[in-house]
Length: 449
Image (cartoon, rainbow, N blue to C red; front, top):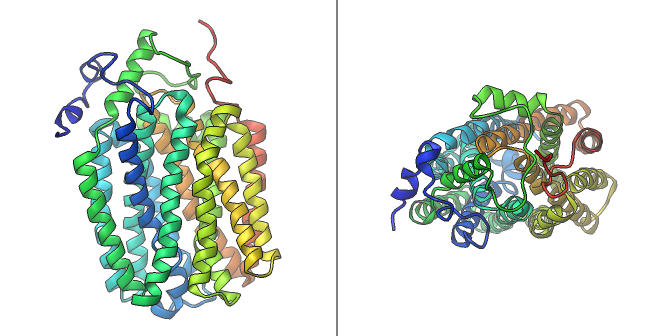
């Protein structure tokens, strides 16, 4: 069955909705498409996870990056975060015009140069360029898996939906990190990444073309039901201050600065990606400096990813029960504690325990932040709001790469970067605790009209 009918439904709202039953919401009602989006985000996670264990360790050996040049080493994360941050917002806005599926396919198209740039790279600059393409791939593809799941689920299921989505993606990150560690030992890093990435891109693109449906009509059907006052189930409390179909800059300014809860959630996103930039590059390098092998490093960093990914299966649904704010604040503070443990600990077992604690902190905050933004965003501009949040969140990679690189460079001690990141997270959790409101529609219902 082709997807022409679904793509054709990406029209002005009155033409895009064929009736209340045509676009029923809920995970059970859309289980097939929900599963397809899970498969897609797993593939996207494999792309970003494949290099997390390998590139930081071989940067000096293969590309001549000085071990003490931390800013130069972090440059590939800076390029990734800068590109992904900007294009997250562009992807959200574009998907409201041409549909989610087409943006997803553009993401896979952008991933095609990555394995070749890494394989043929004569210098570290090629790796920086490859990660710029990885930023495009992640911004378009991962963003659309989240947006599509939210399109087809009920408001009270968003914690569960985002938890499952991020579990699938970050389980793939961990799996790819461990797998490419073993493959690199046997075949060498460049050959391993070439074969691994090409396989992922080809299979994911075919699956997207053949099996993924367009979900924008579900969002427009939801908007129409709200406009008619016939939306079933829990009524969300949408953020006040925007109406109709606002322009891109209006959504961006509102979510980034004008609304207290949105802005608190955005800064929390920045803080968590500063931490992830640390764990992406400097954590493997720190473990390597302590004498651990690539495989040992892969297992410890894999624990972080596995706990993060698997725990989201219960932290997402937990936020549907207890609300969004408490898991976000707790997650930021637990992540802060886990990062502080790394320079204080000694031995593989202690670092593995710290990795597990960091994974738990990430699991509490990561899907819950996305669900919280979606809770108070109107379906007419929800994709743009999510894109704005993801802009700030993933720009945190670039901010983190620069700030952490400078801290490590200035002190010539990796430990200083861990302490800096821990402090940022502690402050961020306090900001959310003081400035953000609860967003879950059951706990914060709209006022009676």
